[in-house]
Length: 377
Image (cartoon, rainbow, N blue to C red):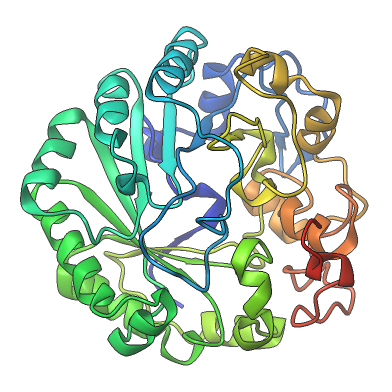
């Protein structure tokens, strides 16, 4: 498998010269209080006083009806934060010297005030947006560039038009998304094509690379399928075995000018030590993929930095796990792999990640624990 590779936890982490920033420089930048974590290939697991990247899940709305919707858009029973509340939170992040904000949804651009929120954050933070890009026309792409948006991460559930349209429940969604990516690239925005590896695309995974070459995108991210939101209803038709996943990834031919991001062995990192996330309702959840499992406090009631010190959050960030893959630890500088999939399958935040071949322990990823099939896992 050629090309450059990096873990999918790094999706969106292109902040302020990050490509050239080594681990030591990053740790110094974030002034860790101590480096008492285990030494990994000569690099300590740092303890940061604030996150490297924070994801704002700005809305739980979307006009599409995607089977792979982690947010289960349209099912919300709580009010989302207002424009003013998000702006106040952005002010907090700037004061706390957070560098990078990654916006996602739902579909962020389906929130009427989203561009106002982006403009408020623009030029004060490094900004990236995860979107289906169907609403990115030429004028919007130019506005995003002027606001200081650095990169779009575009969800494409299949690189085959008919499969993508079926999975989004929206005829023409493939063509609209590709058109949006082309508009973004023409405006000078970076574009990363994201594919969630599933039974619907694993035999045609190479087409993501081919599409990136065709439109001139420089990154492709192949992401794991998480048992969250609406995905749980369709798990039997979407899920793969670990062997099937590894076979599909291993068959990819990636040219040197395209960067491939993926988080399977030997690049399964525990990204919780450096990342944070806030839900559309203001809940500090650590990571969007942890949205159904943890709640460290609401930012409308507690300053975010205080939620960062929640004891459960500190434990998750410690990388103190029951079993870690030595190869993944060496490449990622962290222990244990993804905490969201570890908890999903084992019910423990300290458990091993079954998506790594070294720590799978015989788990069949096609079979979900019964508690995940319930409404509130």
